[in-house]
Length: 74
Image (cartoon, rainbow, N blue to C red):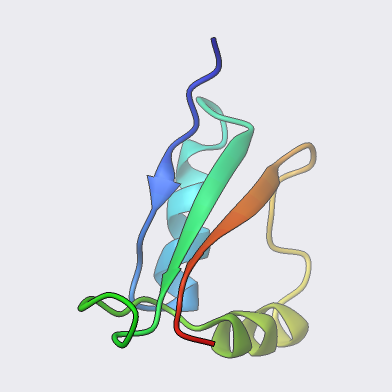
């Protein structure tokens, strides 16, 4: 059985800091994206995350993978 942490963060910086700080323990992360419409909570948007990554490469430690859990209206 594999256990992957599910990460909910308000900013791209906090999200990537969390992943980096925990990459020694886990090599795969589920990133939850919530828009405040489909579900009440909000997290970093995919657009903001993509902009942050474009300005700050490389971000993830080698061998780290992510999947996205989209809780969004569109």
